[in-house]
Picture 1: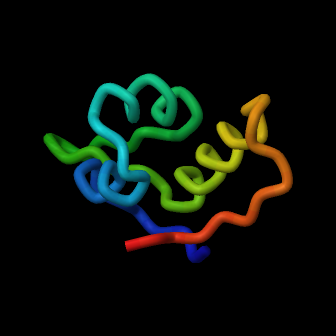
Picture 2 (picture 1 turned 90 degrees about the horizontal axis):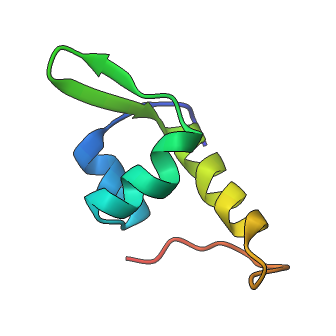
Length: 69
């Protein structure tokens, strides 16, 4: 994936998480960029965070990730 900046609201939709889950599980794993009142994340770090959570899961092994609308 090409590295791009993603706004906070877009990132929540991208990973399909509510604010609390995102703050608890994703934020500790990624860089947060703040420009005045706007918050951004690097898209490739969001992907890496999701893969890291899956890799750490005792249940999910040997998976193939697909984006679903």
